[in-house]
Image (tube, rainbow, N blue to C red; front, side, top):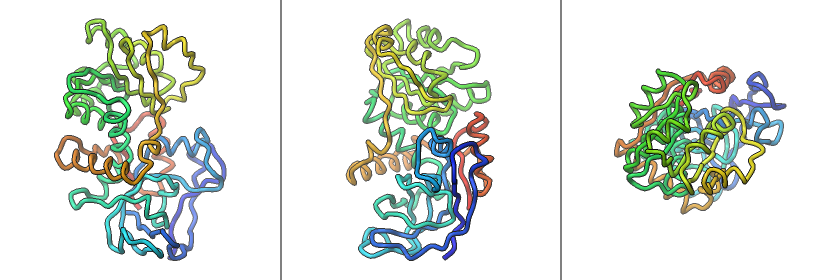
Length: 325
């Protein structure tokens, strides 16, 4: 079986992504062969490609995909050929037409979830689940701040928070993205390129600030996150879209009201089989209820992934981007 697979020999810009044909062996013990139907693009893919998050080289890229099991290795009893499945890693290599990977990294797909939706929402949706419900433990009635509220994770965050009874203040980079954030459920939207975010949040909250800030932007929004958080508030810094937050002085948390900050990792919240099963069940229940939905803003052919990376890093995307083999 020959698979078309993305490979990087070195880190750098999108131009380092190359393609090769690989002869796949039969899946080994505990593994399955998965034929991809749709692949999800995520900011973490650009971090792996650029070297911000070091990965073994040469190697593959991509964490998230949905597809169909084609064969199973010895000892695999949880899946059978023909099963619809999805994965968000941790093994890299989702940028491929087919691949072998551990059965333990797969989730069964409910009949109600199509492949494109799964590839667009699994990693992002599970990220939202753990951040809202287990890291920040947001309660109904809270007012919270979501940076990049029109992005792939941002729109799901806004939908999820609104569904559980929180009020969302979203930040976006343009009027067009502001309308998307409002459609997702944001009660207030601030333009990050022209407004003082901290002052805007204080005005909306009567000078108090917000108990939780969800910040996937990083370097460019760190000061605004500090300024927007209320006394003893929490900043959930989960991404580096504008570059990593570096040189953080603990005294800044004191100066802004004894703040808390966490830099969480998805796989630390999806470590055990029980956590994985419970989190996925919660995500699929939210999908099936209509509380959240996959907003697919871009579709690209799989081998056009370098251009998809360029658009994502330039802030030219909205919602989720998927790659189609």
